[in-house]
Image (cartoon, rainbow, N blue to C red):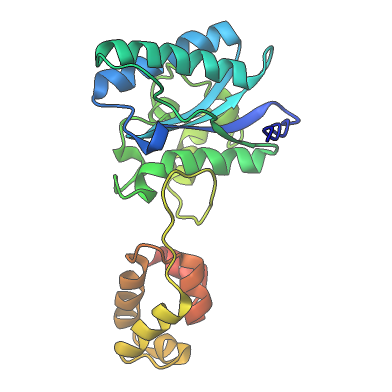
Length: 253
């Protein structure tokens, strides 16, 4: 059965995910990660693409890219082929490293651009590998704050302010803002049902949402923190079940 062609982005902007075949590790050490970034930088010039964001995980890569003169698939093919050739030589292996077809989604608006960029930078946090977005070394968030090497930072910062210092400050705040955004993901999603959450509340003496809302703040927040730490429970789900606003739940630490 022939593949369905990718939907063309009207502005040439895409969120790309390159994944190791069978989810295998594609970076064994920091040299490997540095090599891929150098490869991206090289083919950024050759393919005339713009790079607005990246995140290197252990077995997959997120990129926020804009194509200009050639299709994005050509650029990704150049990057992946070059890296795989080097990787196979280093580790004396042969064969495929990346999944045959990369995943992509169109990024058509300024709002989605910023949310996708935030999602990319928060990917290590949502995967449980870092506590804060700035804790993970291998994302483009650091290039926006200090010196850009691979990433074109001007577009992203200009969406916050024309004043560079103010733009960096607002960018940093936005990139760390809690959210439930869902974009391309390599993680197997675990979803906890509402009935399981309600059963837990019942076990701690909370028969209904009103009882939780009427608790003193310290006790209420302790229960909310416990729920937020569950893998597979979202802030939106907690808000729906408890009747407590999402903004309040977001602030509870």
